[in-house]
Image 1 (cartoon, rainbow, N blue to C red):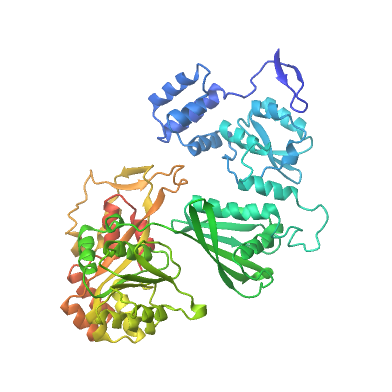
Image 2: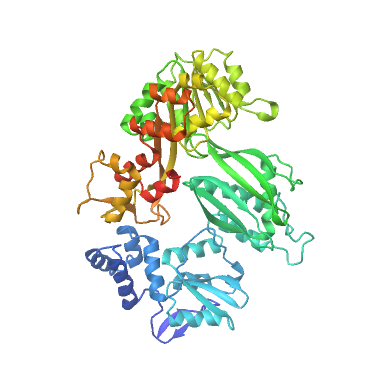
Length: 602
């Protein structure tokens, strides 16, 4: 007879001998291992060694696979899910555990037998377990929750232990899951006066900590934006993050707290919490650590159901990058250095919002930043701080616009001027005038390509002859998803993929690449791992297109020629387009053609 611990009271009693499911049976173990080998996650020889390593009892097989052989948790979880035919639930601090379900259960028993209830939905109980087929565990679960329908999910040993660690109050009290669990327990049992507010306001300590933790987690994940999206009909408020240019749902906040969270952010940004009918914008200076601060731009917009969406843009004060670190093609880097060293003229960096224009301009400024040069910048906001630069934050509300800053700079003895953005004809005219009078001017513009930038400025009403005289170069750029360095793998592409690359690059120009389709030709892709959240991509790689004004190009600008004529001449004179630069980086194994098409093709 085997001795067991009673699930409810912790009393010890007897039970007929049988497997308790603490270790997977040989059948389960073999099926999971076979699945991992079949998927190419681990080799057969390593599997045999891992099984031998786990037989001495010091380490279980799961730990050996995870720690010694670096098998991804999701790979083991997927194999378990396929075997048990139920969902795999990994540990996530955002998962809210209904602690009321644990009140009558013995925690030592749960830790030993590796299962716990997660949530209750009416008569349905969600239970996480290491072995959904274990009959003894199943009997214990049904005895603990008589008359309830049980729905199982499978989890890894260490994840179940982590869930229990947090559920029993031993986890990080500042985690999002712990804070949400605290809020759920604080929901009033009686209907609140305001059913939307739920009886919790923006000054509640849990709301304050939840809002702070969302910002901290977004920064940790490298997000550029946080989107808070409340919905009508008491649906949960979605929190979405934009990481590497792509949005995804990060978590859900109970509907009862949507207004409290929005109001808390408005308080932090010094906005009017009573005004919900019109958009507002403000800023938050958030201290992440003793020596690190985060600037957060806040925009609120009224949406249906008398709610407000909030978008927060995270602006971490960064150090300027060098030109060498910007991943320019060698010819492009040489050309940028050449035009940056000119004593006067205009350099424009163009592209959509979030394409790295300001980062590029600051890299050029770092190249120019010497004691011999006086450099003024006008920015909105100031994202990168450089010692030696005199940087001004524009404030349109007090009429300190880019144009006003430019006029002031011309009276302040500058050598180099950087304007955050040319938004109107006045700013463009002053920039051209400054370039004509012996200053080097750098600025950004929101256009799709280098050639279109010329047309945009001429359409604004700028003098074509003056602009042709001062233009040193127009650099268009995009940021493209980078293949994850942890899980990149080579593969032999199909002939169709080769033809697609050749057509995208241009059939005539493809000959200069010097690549023929053959059996040993390889491209690269990301397999997906924990480091990249199974996406295959982590970080971004820049794509560049540099237009240099030859005598023939200046003549086309002066005569206000069509975009197609300018583009044809630029390509004839050797300009590498955004798509071509992207394909070159595809061939280098930095990204994929699908990602290049997503950001560079019109």
